[in-house]
Image 1 (tube, rainbow, N blue to C red):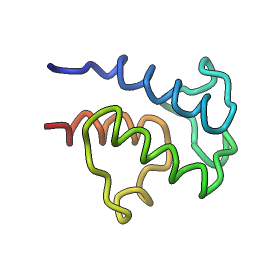
Image 2: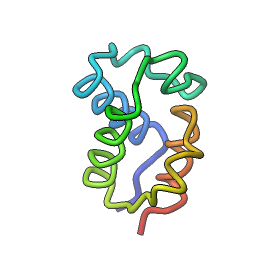
Image 3: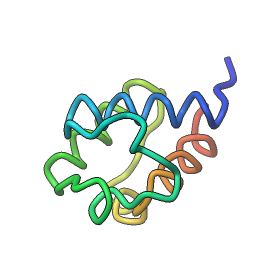
Amino acid sequence: MAVTQDEILKGLAEIVNEIAGVPEEDVQPDKSFTDDLDVDSLSMVEVVVAAEERFDVKIPDDDVKKLKTVGDATDYILEHRP
């Protein structure tokens, strides 16, 4: 089943809220995980693992480094889902 960009964004917001305690409404495409949302590297690993499970996508470590913003992650998941 196809997932929309909005559904991925909502899912990421729920994940970031659960792991880092960031209010879901603050998780927007232009926000940086580290600079704007204060997601540290350990929490980022948890976010990635949760996103992989939720969206059935594999995100290699080299690609995780490229996911600076919520929008980057949303686009990546949209492009790499089966």
